[in-house]
Image (cartoon, rainbow, N blue to C red; front, side, top):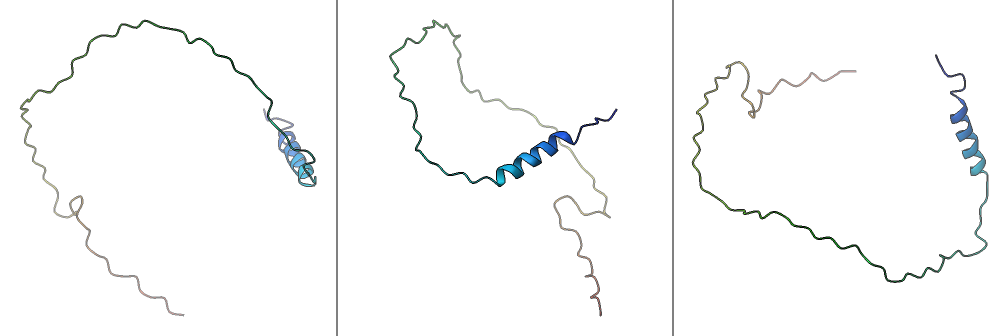
Length: 93
C-alpha cells in the first residue's frame, strides 16, 4: 500500500524554505546570556576495592610450522608486477 500523501512533507519543506529565502532578517537588539550563580555542591563518595593485578613478562619459545606454497607459473606472484601490455592504438580522425 502506497502512501497517498507521500508528497506532503517534501512539499511543506520546499514551501517553507522558499518562504524563508524571501525574508529579510535584521538584528535590532543585542542578545545576552542569563546571569547564573552556582554554589558549591557535594560529590558522592565511593569506596571501591579493586583486585590486585600483577603484570610481567616471560620469555617463551614457540615452534612455528614450516609451510610450503607452490604457485602456478602462468600467473604472477602476489606483490610482483604483471607483465606490461602493449599500449592501445591511437585514434585517427
